[in-house]
Length: 351
Image 1 (tube, rainbow, N blue to C red):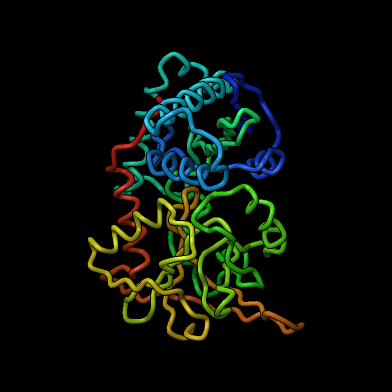
Image 2: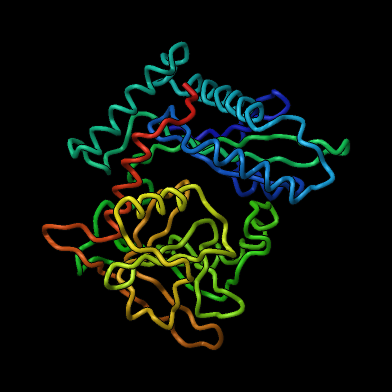
């Protein structure tokens, strides 16, 4: 499948080879957000992303004015997304017939998602339609206004298992079969409540240090280095033995999937403590969950804990969860609940 990436700005569309991180790093400092489709045509939680980007821009560039209100900004963003998606369909021979009626492809994609949710199709079966990742960037202009640019990156990963194990690997799984999170010497991001492109540059060294099968690097609290706050681009939840869910309540970016996960936890009557999970208590950990727009809800199989100083080898913490043949673990229930809410939710449509 083609992997054409597209940039839209100033009502102009260009194809590009650069990824979203480079797109952000090559441009002036600004506020950004990344959202994704779910079943090709629906953009997940777009209102949340637009609101957060506007608020982030106000904190980064307080002397600039935003000429559009939130609803107008949303329509502008949707226009950019639709232009990019139609251009992508034109470029893919197998999808070009949908250019005049992309909603038909959206209907097919949503049917596929529902069949997967009902267990009639495998979560790991590649799809014939793309999912899209949209990265919006708002930067200040010389005239003290806001400039909007969009980077679009398609992929053909199944929508319900994008970089996600559908079930826990067997005990004899190889390293490649396991999904890891790492703890190194990364500390809390500055100004965590805003999505600032400066953070994309600041986190780059930790991203390069990730092991080949590690999904995320977890950040320590500088005031208490054993306390874990969030990931480089994700929120962190830890299920303690007995079923209590812990996540940092402050000093982190309040992500859209984090918010939805907490809502599902309340509905399922899962007790939640808003305190950072502590490495000193890792013998009490049952499951580690990473949540983000691209990952949705991901369960780590292990946590690789590197020493803060010195050449000592890292400790590998294996996670097994507390489940049985008759009941899912807390993490599995949360993941299933989030996916069900996403399928039922009313979202913005690009087709």
